[in-house]
Length: 140
Image (cartoon, rainbow, N blue to C red; front, top):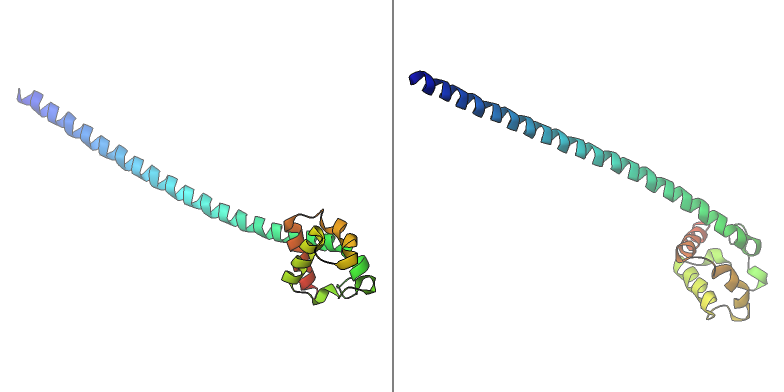
């Protein structure tokens, strides 16, 4: 009877000790998983920062391309009075440019010349108009 009891206790304790090991392994594995997840987040952050820089460069290039059509009347630096009538656009603030852009589009700005500008501006998205205004301000 003592032998059976002794063997039972040994089996019971060895079973309990192996459970502890598996729990420790699981905890270790979950810590590794958390560490890996944290590393992935860091890598994603680096990739996102590169993507932001690429988007910035793309927008800068797009704004320059958008302005090419404007430069034929307004000059390379926005320094000309278009058709000898308008103020040089490089003297406008971003807000003034956007007001004039939207005014040309809805017909409330530009007097008799509004019909000249409307077709150029109404095809642009809001984002493109913002980029264009920022680009023109940077020409100053």
